[in-house]
Image (cartoon, rainbow, N blue to C red; front, side, top):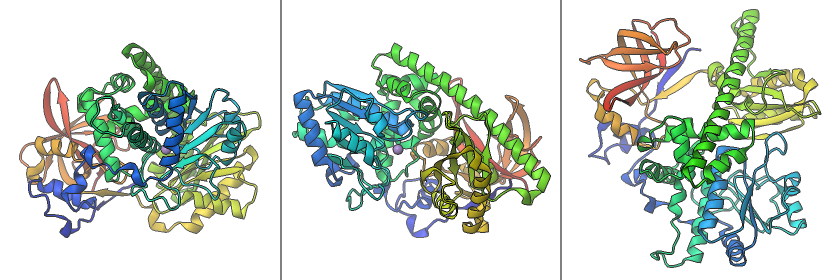
Length: 571
Ligand SMILES: [Mn+2]
């Protein structure tokens, strides 16, 4: 699929405030809507205060009382990295604030499904208070069951509420209608961190006391959940993530995070946001996809290094299994698409692609859908048997920018009532379940609904860049400055430039990666570059335009400038 490079627009008025910044950095910030130095002030002291977050008073009163009476508090989390880090933050944080009867429960994706369901509540027989993290705002029936059984329920969540709110004792969620908290982008782990900040303020009103627990110790976990959940990195989230990264770099991460970094071969001292996204997040998530997220949470709760290392190795092994499953599934999906194209030509591919295989794993379909979506630039639903006796199929949808995929599913549901059993999600991702015999009709209906909604230009493969890098800006200094300019992530993308290069030499490394020596236009010395997974071409063209990142390559204690080529566009 050919990629079109489009340069991000820069508002000229937004430049000029940072006279001491490298001009390239000024342009990068301006393209991300930063208009003054305060917006890149990521010191923790600038974090938004908890005061305007609704529901905190009621939640803190219940928890303060629970700590006083030694009541039993059960944290109910979620089976993704946000839910797992959030659960660990809740358990650790409440213990730091004096709670002595903490435990946690996490639903199993395959058994219970998402959220505080009545079935999950029925497995809890040791709680005075149930505290949900990263779920619960739509769990009307589960909250009702818990209250019937005599438990008090505190819901903390960041997901959009449904038409009816659960009848909980307290709900903390910046996305409730009428909530005044200025940042709506908090992850589930961020919301529970704010609850702890408010509870500490209540229990230890004088700020300077030595007896005041240091909740900053939880920021490594807050950073991981925030980055892994792909919530928007607005200024407040950047402050949280940057604070967590600083702790990790200073060697102050909790034992589990340290062990996970070690297991993934990362150096804690140079950790950046993308390490959280690509090394830690997947290792934690793998437990929830293939086995049980309790394994991930136990790793994050471990206090001694040996236990943490053992659990981190287990997570790495599960992640390796996930990687293999995913690679095999993507390969099969690719073959299916190639066959499709072969049979029908370029026009043969549906606008909305639905793929199902009897042998696929339901925990990995979301990852397969997102890989395929990247390759095909059209919405993809990947489906697998749910693994239950009823022959149900679980599907995961990933969309292209512009197309609201949950609305597409709602269209299908309206046009063909009963075809889909359940569905939910948001603009870019959704989940659904349906009967096995409905797949064929669903594939047709999904394609039809996508055709009806989508505009042709949405199917273009567009990559946004920060424009050309001047020949004199290919320096190690700038690469260092860009590395810490973030933290980069959702809606605050890592700087990406596009230049014209000539190839001086190249060789294959690791079977499918290219190491190249390139010459930029007007540049004197050749520049080292890497292109990972160069599967589309047998060899590089003589010259090409490429979208690339500046990177610092550290080897044998020496640092060198290196370009990471992301998209290569021969002309
Ligand atoms: Mn979440």
